[in-house]
Length: 220
Image (cartoon, rainbow, N blue to C red):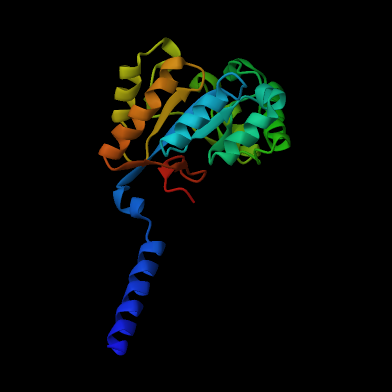
């Protein structure tokens, strides 16, 4: 009996160990999508967005403006603490394609510095304001080792899209794709629980955006 009990105990330990090293959620991730939120951080909106994302098991890339990273460094640190990734969204959100190379350089470099100084690390991803880019912008991005990230799906939240419309936009995402959202629209905040449900129902998980490919991949 003692030998049989020992065998059972050993088997139980082996099963427990296997469960421990195989996250249950891994089996449900048939693909990854990149959730992105532009125009932060702020004391008014960032805490609520981060809470909603965490409560619903989502991670996202926060494309921060340098002026706000400098003004609200605690919120940059909160983004990192919540498991989010921080990207560069220029310093003052101008139309970069209308600026000189020196001006573009200033917008990007000051944001790199502001985010790093706030505790957000050195960004490796850059989203040009309005998605506007050209050879000059891309040259400066390359100088700072940044991968340009536009988007595959626009949620339309910046244009007063309804909660239903924002959820529907997320439902169009396929493996590797990236969606544009913003942290300030109230409807975006309200949509987060349903976004999480919609993605889970399709076997998609919120991933990181690869600096190598610009596509959403499993968090590294």
